[in-house]
Length: 287
Image (cartoon, rainbow, N blue to C red; front, side, top):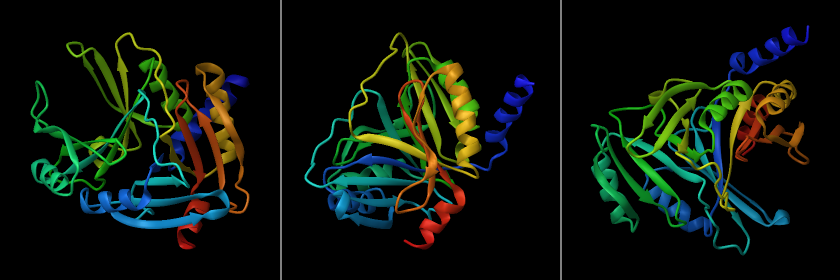
């Protein structure tokens, strides 16, 4: 009976129509970041809010409306102008039809290109790397067209098979692609809710022999939509017993906002927030 129950429970995330909503991270100067992201990256400022009683402001930016596209949520905490990115966070990624042009635009707006555009080692894909004013890295990936230009959040993990299992079982993601690069001593897995070129993926990277990383205090979490945070909490609880991790905020409405959420850490300590889909859409209507 217990096995049937758990099997039924684990089916829920796969059937639930989920999508990655946004990545949350901290910046030292919100206006400077908005200017850079809109002018150099070509993103749009989607919404902005100031919460003086909590002493923070945030801005949502992306390439399309939040109802359908992934966004970055930049958080500015009053008086804090610097953060430690740590060794675990890797990069975000932007897909573009012309990496060379985007790299030139970024340079023209005072941005830093840390890897010049060109094919990847041993392959044909054209990429580059850029750094934003706070030191976050963005991989620029050449793709002829894509419905989702904001296409990756890369995080380093200590046990890739464990992480793949966790994101499949706890979040209903699918493994889009797994690549092993023995000559560079790393393996990575692209996890998402659709095909890699059509969606935003979590790129989980395992560096041979490295099981732990520092988290820093800059990158915060990803948010994912769900039709039922309470049922999701049952699933996450079940998976945590098997693979590790921790619920950090029990399922329920946020005070003042009413949006129902659930927060938890994966086995490496990376945070995910599951957000009630209908509540999220209401939040967008009231922005």
